[in-house]
Length: 279
Image (tube, rainbow, N blue to C red; front, side, top):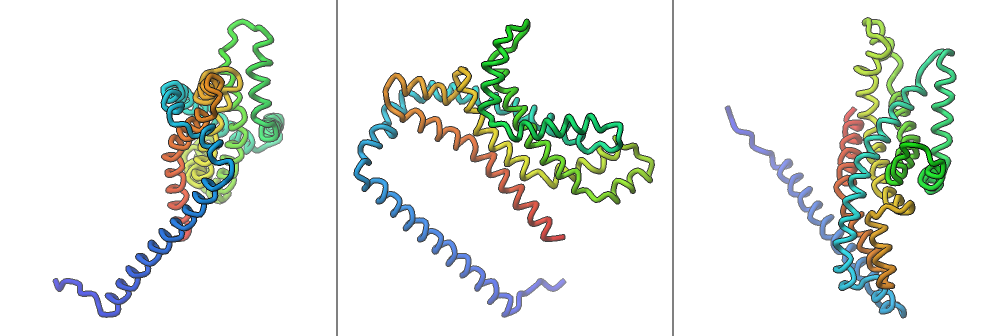
């Protein structure tokens, strides 16, 4: 078999694309360097820069506060895992209830709709205060801890958003596929499980991951109820030193925690866009 030999035009096209790629990388690096230099000069040249640096960027205080903030961040990570699983499960359940057909299911659909309207409209901080400060005031037997109640507030709020994302994915599946599945003898439950949900979840995976990133950020709000997470630990260190550097430290750790999930979200979004462009 004769080995493939690129033509002259093919080699020229390959060389042209390589030159364009190098040129794009150089232009991007140059523009990034210019913009970064301008930002550094603008910030460090401000009249109050030394005062801001001493109040927010003290390395000694950051080093002293690091163990406590890192310990608090571990609490945020565990809370994120449980809240993400709970919100996804609740959102999927609510979406399925909202897509039920038939007049007999009207009360269920009405309750599910009321839930999504309520918790998508309520500010998260109000839900947190009601569940972590109001509910314990009832003094019921077996009352869970404030941390659990704070996690429940996050699950209820984000469950409302995720329910609408799941519902959009379910309703994006063409009705002919449901009819084809039912004509093959599948029940409604089997149709949803084997035909509709796999396609729906694949189509809405990017927004689902995006909401999970937002949840990762908002788990820090549970500190308002008292648990010592990363934000609360930074608040304690700030009160002891009268310096805001621990808050910057906590923010940096949250960003580092979010980067892998954001990268996965971007990868899934790009993959979905390429699949759609390819037909």
